[in-house]
Image (tube, rainbow, N blue to C red; front, top):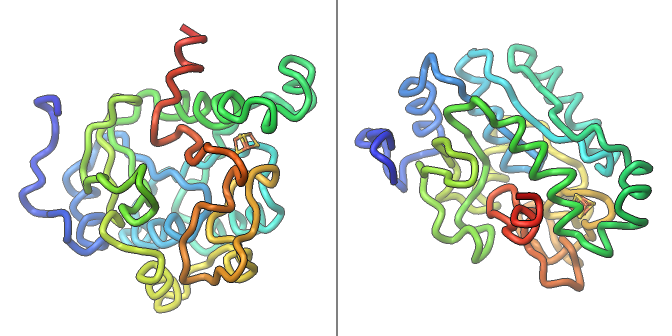
Length: 241
Ligand code: SF4
């Protein structure tokens, strides 16, 4: 890690997420700090933890133009519940029609990595320019790609400090928090969708309830497991360079 990695002496890998959020808001007061969310359950819990501090933090989300109607409705419910937070859509301006014209039809089938770069990774790169600290709802229990997640990391892809307050939790623990604090959440979690992404690339997982986390419904039938927001997709960045 670079020398500007923050002192984390007051929080550790097993600290309660609420304590990590409080530490981050205190430690980075006056710095450019954002929360990002795709409106999954972990993101909703994180938003609630941040909102309790009554600070006006931007909550950045990306409208891929392919989200579920329930996800847009959840965004509205969260904005109503936490009016002091600033929900900012920093999604792409590339319409689905323009994408099909430039890159061919159904890019999410033909080249999902490129589709994710266009609709998620590049918009996030732009949204994070000038940001010092990025709070996420990632957890170590979300699969092999995230198993080594630290509470505080230096993000080489975006060149900023990344804080993952929920790193040690699993979905069952997040669900407990959401229920205990009456946090708005996506009703699709109760209809077999453990995670919420784009409609084209998110399928229900048979038998899954709101306490269950699984990514098997994402890009089902392919080897793709991540959109690239939290892991570089070098092939496409190399192409763009
Ligand atoms: S999740 Fe699917 S539709 Fe959404 S940006 Fe990625 S490939 Fe495209």
